[in-house]
Length: 150
Image 1 (cartoon, rainbow, N blue to C red):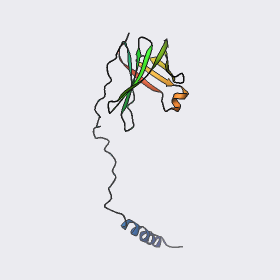
Image 2 (tube, one colour):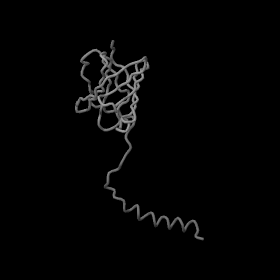
Image 3 (cartoon, rainbow, N blue to C red):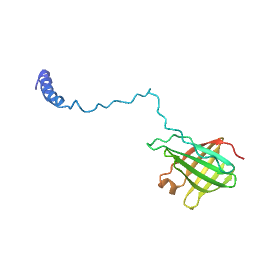
């Protein structure tokens, strides 16, 4: 059985040459400074409401590289819009109708397959999407009221 000294010498011979082959000109990867101030993208603002209604904005900040903000607008006439705005200031919306009973809001888009259920809790609108929309990548979200309505 080899002695401990022989094992250490063999290990040094095997490891030593492999570390000599490291390319020192390659970039060194460092961890980001978590105490550095965050760089915020320019603020994105939705257009003003076009008729009386209530506005609810998404509570969670998007985590992907493309900034996209969304809001629900529940208009007083029983229509709603799920609106989105991205960093290129592209504005779009999905429109539909809603019915409300107590704290439950049923949202139906133009397609009968696109259905969601909202629950109003104080100033929050918690939206749960049906299976069809979840298969399309839509996630249940919570929105907060940011403007009054009637």
